[in-house]
Image (tube, rainbow, N blue to C red; front, side):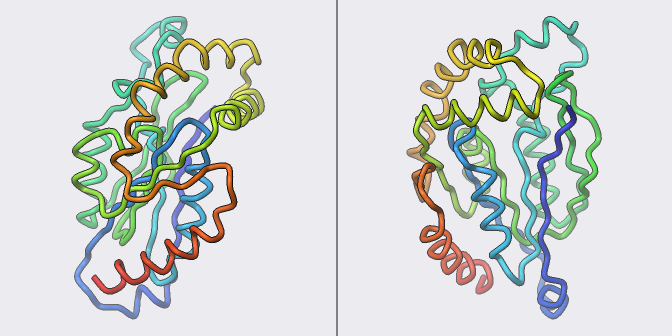
Length: 227
């Protein structure tokens, strides 16, 4: 199944009225698998009125495994930082932040291949990157303006992952549970949980986001619109 979880929000009246040099801001949203990263990224994007905002999923930048036989692809640990094509991601982000057009790739989690996506990003003022390793790579941290970590209970994340992978990716319960125990859980403890220390804000992923969003919206509107 091909996925290209990227979204764009724009208030045309507000952005066209401001004649200012292009400047992009990068917001990173990290946390464990199915912790609520996409949900809060979308909520933030909808509230940034007056700014052209795009949400990019780090999942779109998994390495293309088309060079491997089918069975070998399933053995790759997608919960390890090496599974991300970080050079490609950094290259695209730098272009986006410079206002240059970028076609965001789409990743097929059934065939484990990366193909051309249908979203072209150009002149984005706010770029929200969400993914399990969003707060892992030093280069991303240096580029960012705000770093958020979603801290969700492991049982809740597992339940959400089961539902997603079975319904959206056509996998069996057994395969999802085996992957969770063999790679997802160990990798979370080794690579993802430690990135919490890199966050500016830590949000409990199992609670309602309303109060946090109100606070974030005020901060972002002030920081981004006034810069």
